[in-house]
Length: 189
Image (cartoon, rainbow, N blue to C red):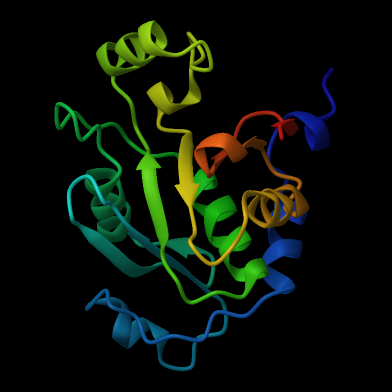
């Protein structure tokens, strides 16, 4: 038997992170506007990709339900930009990213450095760097490497760790934080 609180995202951990913050923004996802009238709990994702020039700013969850079309847009946005391959993105990772963003109280969108990585891209990156895992959660759509100009790596990692919901890697030399929905763990400086 495993202890679920230490090996996977707990509902209590994520709800605690969201309860500690508030999202107050008009949705950019057009069909969510009607749903949001009088709504209480919403989750928002804001990112841009310097690699593709694309931006995403949307409500992806409303009062307990993920918005299917928003998940499709997230999947496309977080694709492997090197070969345009896509995979379903685990929305638990998106929840960690959104909760961390809220805890940092910033309006700046994340810069997405890496979302989904195809096996070919992951193998190429492994040949170039010893810091790339052979069985990376990026290849399962369960991880993202992120940067914020207004927050340090330590501030971002602290916010992600406060969610108690997945892996958090500090890459201070490259100025980014890895967030994933795998087992709760921390690494890097």
